[in-house]
Image (cartoon, rainbow, N blue to C red; front, side, top):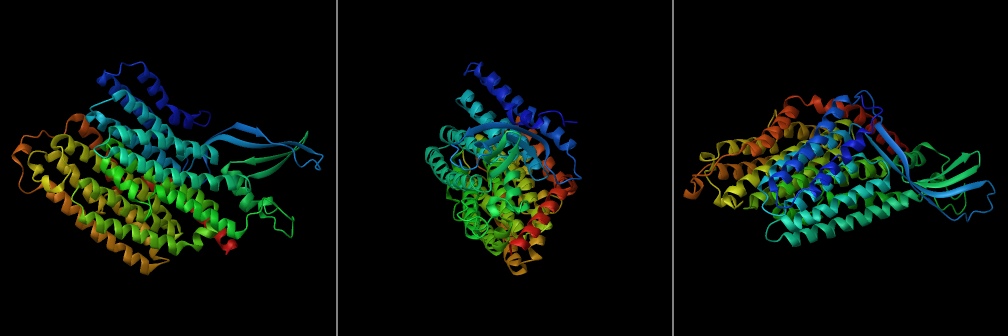
Length: 544
């Protein structure tokens, strides 16, 4: 259906139309600004839904490819002894495509962003600037999950940092500026490490010779497929040529260098995930940012870390990643238990959810560490499931704060009497978070633990303790908010308005859909994950 359409570019850049319209609307016209912004997020949601329905599930290949030479930088021809040399250049392409790993994340991005736009109706100031940054952020997130060139991926990744910095620092709560600065410092460090790793890859594995009628072209490419081909498929590529084959080969990647690059990518994307101990910045963001911004941050931006780790860290360095499987599993267990135990001690519901996110991202690490098809499916299921659940819970946080001006659990009691709908949705979100069967959280946790149990049963058993802790802190928080004595000032609170109820119902619908009929996601994932697993096993075996 979309083979001849630039459908991915249409999805990624459709929010630009909303930005252009917003520029011509007076800044004091809040209703018009909100309406345009919401419509601007519904367009990519519709397009990504159609794309999901059109996606071919019987292949593990990248689909809907868009590939155009974008940046071509000529270099000095310092290898003059090669008389046939025609051109020597860097080449970075505008290259987009999706597979069973990235497409669900593209749809999740469109869905959560649209629901967050609806949740932003509580916004009190500077609507025009907010929605412009909001839509720019959406463009960056789409690009991250679609890009197939390292330079393009890095640009989209950085594009998400600038809007988030302003969205946190301007529209957050009391310590919003400190939270924004900490966000920028930590993520900036991660981006710098990632950029350095990408530059090394481009200048080694990205080096390629191309024969033409005019002579030979030497170029450095950022294309992920070219880099993967040079690393693994082309045994005669320069990156694989040892000193015995080509003396003083500047493109050769030794095992030590591959291990170094793997750890650089692990740290870079681990900060974003976040992996303990790189998590403190995330706590401030969850506490201080506006709830609609946290919906996106927790629901999507954290997933960019896991996606980058899988797509680049695991895919390009499978032997190193599998060799460090136990380390990944241990980090996952630390995330699970640390997040769950600290969540139990919190009194602010936003911090309970923040530590819960740390704990649930640990399950993603366990699924990756399994290095089998079941575990990888569980990791990706967890990305989608947690994205839906965390977005729902922070949507509720925004509705509660708008009515009560507090998120302290001790001050919120008996709200089910005046807010039965909101508290009912809160209960569903909590049950999904603790992994109740027939909800999405159960499927993702079951697959991740099942996959890891096949290879590391002892670590799996320890990790499952987090499920028990999760039930304790989730039920404690929800029951205290919903039941018990209620303050007199809260008795007259009005329940969810239509603009709040619609995104709540939509997110619950997808949470239930994945719990009752997980095939809607697993069928999309199957061939991609199966091919990914075979790739890891074959390369890791050779590397070992």
